Length: 134
Image (cartoon, rainbow, N blue to C red):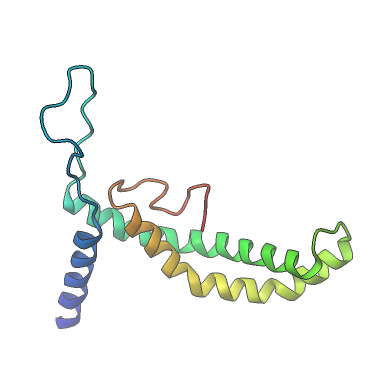
């Protein structure tokens, strides 16, 4: 029970500390023509979004990371060639390494994406589905 409380406190602390400051850049009343910004998400919604984003984003980061690592390794090994034999043999060689690096880096990648996007809970960026995967 003690570890559960420690884990919960650590998770809450990470979410609260990583939440961006929602202060307005200009002080004073908004102008008449300006649209009012959307209200920031509540803290429980941010926490739940971060947890769900990490859990759902882990397998997504695993697949996308494995594919990206293998493509990068194949290109580094054979270069920009159209030779199918070289591409397939390099792909067969790098497949286990791509899977291993994707498996090892996916929890960290999904946690990073989830924490960097706490201001937009349950968004595609928080679930690691954005186009600029890194």
